[in-house]
Length: 224
DNA sequence: ATCCCGAGGG
DNA sequence: CCCTCTGGAT
Image 1: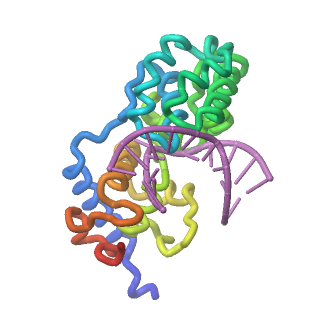
Image 2: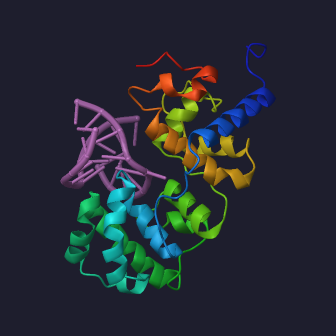
Image 3: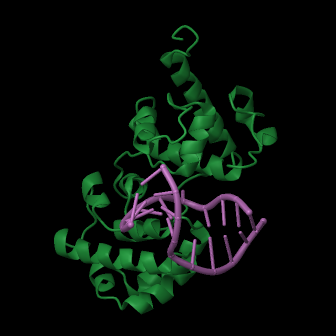
């Protein structure tokens, strides 16, 4: 068992090679959401859940023109807020999240976006993935956002020691990958894995034929 | 039908 | 651990 198992050093070396290939495949993968401050990024990221960045970007200009800061958003009329963010979907829950979130920012955090994982995830609508995006992009604090794409892609590439697990633990994936890459790579690497999952390594029919990673991918050709 | 750079609730 | 929440695009 231990003899046939790939050594950690070899596995880490392979992960780094595959990261380099991802960089060649997707030269311009940075935060698709344009923002001017941590509050705007936080709101835009909360809105981004299970939607496309295009829809989020279609509502944020009006949203931030009317509610430029936590104080004004905390006093927003719920139905008006719902109307503004309606195109992103999940508008009822997300409007409630934005209201509660901005109220909590004004009451508990002096109107500022907190800079720790525990404080961020205490906000309504903010999970670990969203918190890591905000930490990395707004504050330069390294974090590794794990979403469904990261779970799937890292499993197929076998970047996880527990890749056979049916229901992998996202926190464990985060820690495993952070253990193998320097902190300055985390945000960028996460974005590329997510982008790869969307563009090529789809859940149902992954496009292995056009994927440069297929040569070293243990799952290539075994799917779809 | 299935997917969108998820999170909260039961 | 499952489900729901939205609607538009493919």
